[in-house]
Amino acid sequence: MGVNDVIVYDTTLRDGEQTPGVSLNAAEKLEIAKQLKNLNVDVIEAGFPIASRGDFEAVKLIAAEVRGVGVSALARASKADIDRAYEALKGAEHPRIHVFIATSDIHLKHKLKMSREEALNRAVDMVAYARSKIGEVQFSAEDATRSDWDYLAKVYESVIEAGATIINIPDTVGYTTPGEFAQLINYLKTHVRNIDKAIMSVHCHNDLGMAVANSLTAAYHGVKQIEVTVNGLGERAGNASLEEVVMALNTRKDYYKRDVRVNTQQIYRTSKLVSTLTGISVQPNKAIVGANAFAHEAGIHQHGVLSERSTYEIMTPESIGLSHNNIVLGKHSGRHAFEAKLKELGYDLDADAINRAFERFKDLADKKKTILDQDIEAIVENKAISVPEIYQLEFVQISSGTNVTPTATVGIRREGNVMQAADCGDGPVDAVFKAIEKAVGQQVELQDYFLKSVTGGKDALGEVTVKIGKNGKTFLGHGLSIDVIEASARAFISAINRMMVELSYSNDSEEGVK
Image (spheres, rainbow, N blue to C red):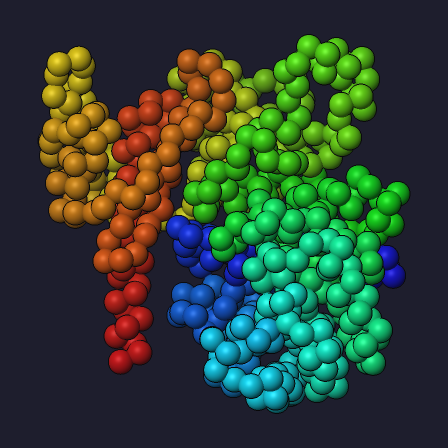
């Protein structure tokens, strides 16, 4: 890498997955990891292997199948965590163990029940242990920005001597400000005597809305690695947003004088995939990837943009992968045009995936006159959600209206048999969900329901996301159709299918542990 290059360390699959309500299975994590590779991030933090069997398997799968990118796994400063991370990472082309321990007095006293000296010794011993297993070891001092600076410098100096190749400065609770962060970074540069032997990194949370600003400040002051998540996902208010950090560095290269290797034309595609798989929608006014990011409503803005884009656009939609091609697909469009559109939109699918997407496209084209780019994206992203179809929707019928009790009848196919059931509800969607529960013999808690239009117009695709609960766990489902009732039914069945698979997997895992 060049001297001015910034290492983009993506932690969407670890810290991002800790977003409340988000739970990704191994296949979904692999799908995102492959797209992160297409995005050309430098390192993927694939998970926290000791946290669960599912996390371990996901890290192991990504390590084995995603090449040409660093794969990192998180571990507390303990041998058990490090051993588990090492086992998951063994198949990686460029593995990294990320060891952390808290260093702030508030964490030492109330969480770890350790003295400063005990924490320092633990950090040194575990970094040395991790380094004995793997060549690249990252060390994070959790809650670094609320730690005593002299003590923090001593910890970093000691872990570098023990073998840490990257030292990370986390603003764990989003407490610091850009000015303070700059002072801390410069202090560590001058007070950690062997700082030249390790790469400096930062990991910023967004509790005060300054994660991106703090990350960019770090880049300006020479920090080599920035930790980010797609769409700014993460615990509480989230992390520094990958798309905002990258596009700021690219757009204001004159100021930051730093380079990133990220393929910015894959940003929108990545954001859409992560949003779909996590069920966390991107707000319309979100910088870079929001629906309004390149929209202009005010007359004076519209006039300016039509005359010269740069009047109100500091970057182009094309630079993040938004297409403005005028080729329109419809029911008479052939496979060649469809494949060309997929490539234009940044998709690299195998033959089977193209076949499935093309069939879905043809079904949609019979119902909708014009197929827009957003429709194609929705079709492909919806098919990317790998949930085994234990139950399949055969049909749904509803009776509803003013002063009429909504009633739904559904047919659900399982292994060649169609089960029918009918029920009433407070509305047509509620009636459909109750009928599905009756047909499959499962009672679940509906935790969230979200409907959005993929495009405009009366023939717009409706995309439904539902969250259901069972046995203290949450399961996500997605459905897509011009008919919002059908989309709702498909989303509910998708969530039930995931529940069936994951609860079965969980039970099998527990039996294996025993």
